[in-house]
Length: 467
Ligand SMILES: Cc1ncc(COP(=O)(O)O)c(C=O)c1O
Image (cartoon, rainbow, N blue to C red; front, side, top):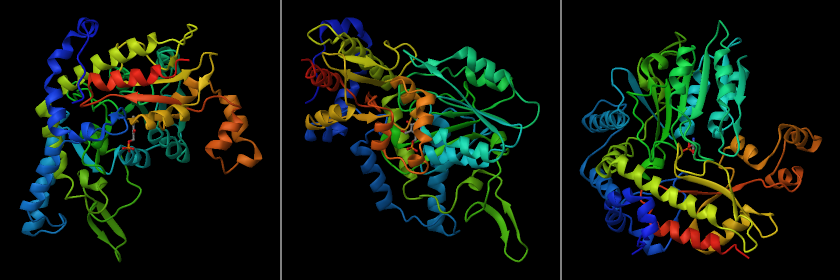
């Protein structure tokens, strides 16, 4: 079994790890594939893992019920409607969101939730879209909707080495509120690049100045409690597989009902209207979350959301959080202490060096004895050979990547402006363009059933680069 006996140094540094021991037996019982395959899974920010009992409960439910399309009004359809309502209710409870104030729009993933906001937000001339460099591409993409409708899009940079935001600049930007139009501020509660947890207090700061706030919780919610009764953005995007592994293909947009009313959908579709007419050339959007749920919801999969939430709650988010905090701290302490035999540091970390205001995402590049970065693709190849699942590249977070890797706006623009690259640019072209600089990093991320053995194995792997 893949547990490692904690050393006295670990126990002294992270005494609360002991209180998370229940996760070891859970892992052995519910996640046997980890031991059976010998895989060291370190890619929880990309996807969490699912337990056997989630599958058992879901398939027992499907075997025991006749579910029909919820748009019909017959008994099998009512069965599906009941379970969809239960899933909605459970999501609200999980995020401590008052059902009187909040709506849950089911989507296929966080990206679709973000797109719903982007395409429906009342961007117009005079309006602003403000966002952090540190954002997933599915948030970055909203700038295209904003600009197409005459609003401006402005980025606030993050700053090395911790990759936190330049808060003075953020406050200056938040203070610049044009008198007309609607203004949206978007940021991630936790970076999927650096692990930085950006302050949830920015939500109130932005609200006080007249901004609407879109919080990307995709990397935060899997290992942190997000309590919407305390932090109240207008929109929150989430993918459920990132929290409990199964099901994939379901996410949600949690939206304040008031904020949802501000959105204007650019079209209508099956499931989103009360009445639509061909000859009368008119449609009436539904006045609740179904206005945003195009077509038939994945009604066979949605009951698995309730099951997943039950599973996480039976463990306790605080236990998951504490385990990830201890393991992240231990990983950072040890990784940062590694040196080449000539004393040069083995890695360069992009993000905070301690567990203060950060989550379990640890991103870095490995350096050789001459102080040259080792290509992240080579590290990934070696990791795969060692049956370690980690992630390399920029993780769909180009702003984070550009700051970490020292790519400037000028050199990026001069690359993109080359005639050959007007409409077409492969990753290899890009690599040539930026003249040998690293185009990516290595990301190790911890989650739900990470254990000390995972971290120990990864550190042994990292030591393999010492020459
Ligand atoms: C912070 C963050 N936001 C959004 C997403 C997009 O999630 P999805 O691909 O499930 O839509 C991810 C995925 O990794 C993420 O880490």
